[in-house]
Length: 496
Image (cartoon, rainbow, N blue to C red; front, side, top):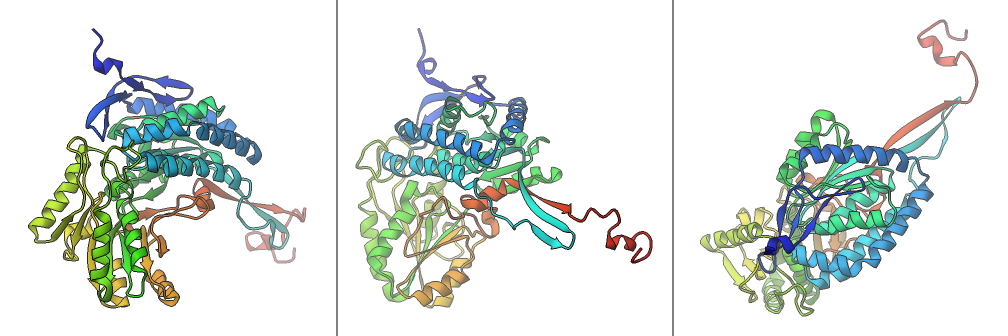
């Protein structure tokens, strides 16, 4: 008799042009808590094999013209778009995201990002070739790094893979990528679609697994760059592993975004903005509005309206069109979020639970923590769930101080109808992205990255493309003189 496990779809690693099925790890549906598929389990040896394939593919891919690479990536984007329904459903099944989110954001935004980098690579930024020193012409070349190692998180599996792969490939590199162990499926399909769309075998390699695979990628001598999105703690470990070989490293790490509501703000708009900012993707977003600070004059009105709206959020089946947010990604994450809320209760913090949740699966309701101490763990730590805190402030100076009182610096928002206030506060906040009268939207054309312990380097925009290239200065003598005027400083006399 065939077991249930044997009937499940097994997702392979993609190494070169091969689908490698060795090893097996269960994949759990967060909405049910049950296993629904298995995935191959990679090793350091698989990383080495993937790097070999990547090096071979990169030597030819990197030699193509910008136009040739652009055309190939445009075709790939078209192929991804044709698989929108499949990818959106798979992302919802594997990560617990609502189909509202995957169909209308994650997948189309990912396709747009591939198209953006396919186009922007044809217009490189840089100085004009010119005579910066008499007798010489200088120009810059932007060249690929070679093989890029990428490690992606579980909260936006498809989108974060694209944020790394698209600029890396546009710049002429090949990629060896490790997805999060519990959400690898859309990344695997992404690589399969790339092969089907005609991208060279070995250009995108997906090695699934756990710590062994990640550490092998970070320490492999033939990988020239590591691009990581995830926790600050893991980012520090990655930097440590990469440093002995002086690898280039980009890190998009944790966040604890402040959401500042001033007395002159449109309170209805701010309440809706907080709702979206705090609960999108069940709060599993490093730019989520986790620390809401409201000026005294409007504190009560804002909290009342925000609570009213939060109680209307529908938590449930990700595939139900009426569902607003789905489950958390895993039992581990559910336990973590529960732990922070329970700790806040024990500290005497008022806890407002806003919705009913299904009894099965890793669901957690929108939960507001009212006026906790500024040094409480729920204010200081990245909870990564639908659990914002709401606190008061009196003055603009106090708002800025409270907002910057964190080791993180990824994103923040300012809510005011006073343009001078918006300009002053956005300049004073120590965060890589500042929204005014909104929270969360990002676009392919503009950069995203953090200050302080939220990381180094940029995703999105031509700034990300530059991260995946090495700048080479070429200086050419245009005089033809065998002896230059300046040679006397080392040999002979001036004027000889």
